[in-house]
Structure formats: structure tokens, C-alpha cells
Length: 332
Image (cartoon, rainbow, N blue to C red; front, side):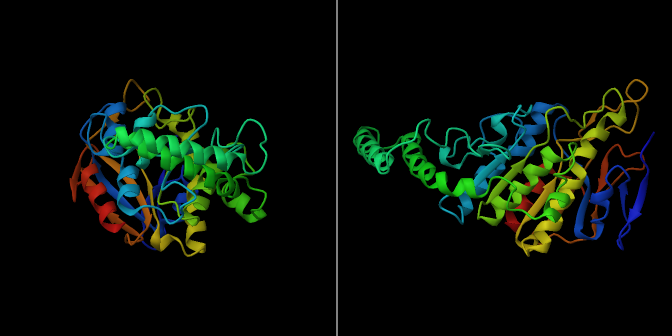
């Protein structure tokens, strides 16, 4: 069955009934209906959304933010990435530092189990041994640096060893859900198998932001997709998995007084065509897409731009990905 749109909130923002929890936040959201991008393929679309350009090798948006603003917690990286542990199509270039120093690339966190792989030693060590090893390693690296003074990879490695040592204590504090009350579990959908994976990542995103991490990327599950070539309803599992946790994140940030200084962006790499592909599917559409933004000084309950009457092309107050990036950079 096809999903219907209804006017929601005092602002009358039209949102599909496939997203009931997001719809309940209409008066807290800024809806950009006039997004457009420069390419119709996934790979290029992901690259544009992440870096502003089609080709790999440029710094990702999160890398620019961590480079420009640093972190408020010297025991955690400035840029964190939360993805499906089974893997997700876009790949590491979505959080790569490009030609910025490698220090500003994204660090992968996991919402279940060990938050960061290889963070702890495989075997228990006598107190003080690790610190002695790190001190000796730094001495060797400093000697090596004298012969390679301009190698930013070596500098990054030295900084990362020290950061990793501090993270062994602090990273464990933000993992797990045992310290979270029951209403938080419900708010993020942790009590439901459909919403739990994305919900855990959204909850960890809040914890990271609360701990001073500057930029967090949250990716959905590998098996879910908006890519409805065969049947437009194929996107409904993605909606069901992400709607409640995404809304929960916004509500939680707002309740904690963090939303005014945090920007939440919910977007894909392009939109869908208004005409059928085959009989029930929809192909990619670079000419029109929607983007939801909350917090960070963006006007709540506001609808920006519109498409033509068919929904094929953005025609009023058009917003390119570069426009979006520039606006986000300005606010941050």
C-alpha cells in the first residue's frame, strides 16, 4: 500500500505516514525540499555529500570540522563514525581526511561490544609496562622524525598512540546501555529488534556529542536501503528502522539542552524520480531531494524551497550540496 502525506505540527509540514515519529517533531525541524546534486550514481552521490566533489581524495566534511574546530575532549577523537559492523556500501572515503593530515579522519566506533577495535592489549600487563613501552616508542619515533621532519603520517601516529592510551579509559565510559534509564531505551527503540541497531548508534552519537566529540556520522544497516528500483515500498524497512531512533536523538538532545548547539542532519545522496521504473519502482533523481535539519540555529517548523508540480526538479530556493555544506560550516 502507498504511504500518504499529512500536514503535521502547527507549521503544517507535510510528512509521510511512513515516518510517524519524525512527523511528531515537525515544529522542531527545518525541511529543505529543494536539494539537488551533480550526479545520478551512488558512488559519486556519496562522494558529493561527503566532500562536495565527485572524485575521491578530498577531505570529508567531518574532517574539515575536526580540523577547524578541534575537540572539547582530548581523550576522544574529534570525528567519530558509527556504522553497521557488517559493513556499509559508501566505505572509508566517506570519513577520510583526504589531503589533510590523517589525524583528522574519522574514527570508527561500535555501539555494541568493544567500542573501538584493538583498543586494549590482547594480554593483561603489569601496571606501568604500557606507559614504559609508549615512552620508549616515542623516543624511537622522535629519532625517526629527525630524518623525516615533514611526514605528517608519523606525527599523526605518535599523537594517536597517546590518544589511544587516554581512550582506553574514556571510550569504555560511553559504550553500553546499562547506565541508561528505561525511558531512554524506549526513546531510541532499543527494546525492538527492528529499531535497536540504528537506535544504539543514535544513542552513542548523543553520548559522543555530550562528551565533546565535534562531529559524528551515523550510517544505517547494510540490509536496509532507500534504493527502491523494484518497488517503492522497498524503502519502508529503512523507514521503520530509522524513524524512531532518529526522532529519539533529536528529542534527547533537546531535553538535555544540547540541540541549540548541535546540528542534526538527516539526508541521502539524491532523491527519487516521480515516474515509475518498470511498474512499481523509482529510479535515482539528482534534480530534487529533501533534507531534514534540526538544531544549531536552523529555523524550526520551516519549509525551504519546493519542486515543480511533478516533484522532478527543485525550482524555488534551490539548494545544492555545496550550499548546504557552506550553511552548515557557517553555523558551526
